[in-house]
Length: 112
Length: 183
Image (cartoon, rainbow over all chains, first blue to last red; front, side):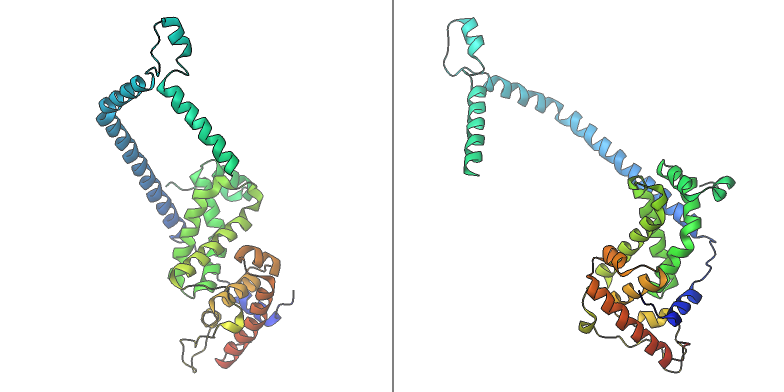
C-alpha cells in the first residue's frame, strides 16, 4: 500500500500524548452508573413479577382447574371405570385437541 | 472505584485483559489507562472536537466493559477495541450526520470553516473531507490499516476504499497547502 510519506509524518506529529487526568475516573463513574441502572432495572422486574404472581395467583389457579376439568371430559361416556380410564387419552376433549394439533401439523408439512 | 493495584501496570496486557474478562474492574481501569491515548487520538482525527472525542472514547470503553466477556482471545484486545471504536463512530455518524458509503465522485468537498489566512491544522483539514473519505484516510494513515482491513471494518468495497484514500490524500494535500500547511 502506497501512503504519502509527508501525510504519514503529519499524522505522526499530530498524535498527542494526552494526559489521563480525569479520563479513566470518568469511565469508571460511567461504568458504576450503568451498573446501578442495570441493578435497579432487575430489581424493578423482580418486584413486578412477584406482584403479578401475588395478584394473579388465585385467578390463575381457578383457570387451570377449569381447563383441566374441561379437557378431561369424556367424549363418549363409558360405564366401566377401568375402560374409561384406559381410553381417556383418546376419549376426551384433550385427546381430540391433541389429534387435531397432530393433523394440522401433518397438513402444514404436506402443504409446505 | 479504588486505585488499581500497582502491579497491574507492569502486567502483560493479555493477563490484564483476562482479569478484566473475569469482572475485575481494577484490571479494566488499567486497560483504559493504557489505551486511552490511542482511542482519544483516533476520535480527535475523526471528529475535530476534543470534547466529542473524549465523550465518544468514554462510550467506547463503557461498551468494551459490557462486552469484554465475549472476547475470545485476550491477546487480540487491541484490534477488538479498535473495531468497537470504529463501529461506534459509524453508528454516531449514521444517527447524527447521515454517513453514506458512497463513491468519492458522488460526494462534494465541504468548504473548511476557517478563513484563508488562518493556518489550518490536520484535524480541521480532515473535517473538510466527506465523512466516508475521512474515515478511510484516518484508518489508513492514523491506524495504519490495510485496504482489506478497512473493508472488513467498515463494510465498504475495496475499490471504494482505494478511491477514497487516493482522492482523499490529494484533497488533504491541497487543503493543507492552500491554508499554509507543511504538506
